[in-house]
Image 1 (tube, helix red, strand yellow):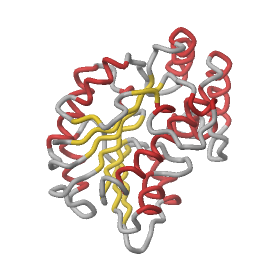
Image 2: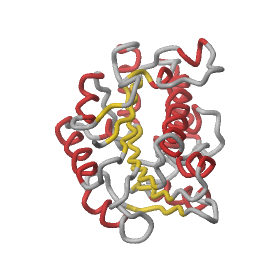
Image 3: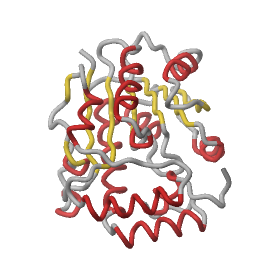
Image 4: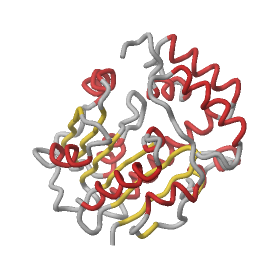
Length: 260
């Protein structure tokens, strides 16, 4: 893959107003936004949800190590920045299998001296390989861990396979570990979002599949879901100063859940 091909993290970076993107990213991002103008709101809501969820894990839940699969780099306020701002000793492993993400990760993975950050070149569809590599140096997977799966499971077309991947990852983590997950849905602006996703799938090398909230709930099987449950990302424990636009329901549902 080169910068001549749109890359999902760089397109999201463009929607968020960032600079780490190229002309193909901007072109498909603009085509997408013409069909579904709310995608910029979805992008902001998704990132804000991740920030609130990771802050919750690092503060209220006391989590000190994080496994973020499908990093979303390049963008701002990445998991290690949020976690280490709350708890400088936090240890974070990012996982992706895109060489472009690795390039960005090398520049972005500057963490605190007390903590640690690492990038693994591995595939979501190889949970055992991810766990083996993550536990080799940076993470102690016998201790509670925060598993982050943001906008990545939609790239697995088969729902059973996607749920199986989540199950394998969580099964290897001890009680007290958390899952943070969010993906696109089709229940609020379904036709418009679906039309835009068709544009994405026609231009990008990795297809994305919208799912209903009841399908996304499959990923939470066996876990205790933290209040307020699986909800539009904008409505998961919003900031007290959130505006009406910040709170508007978006077609991306997220949840935080703990392994009992």
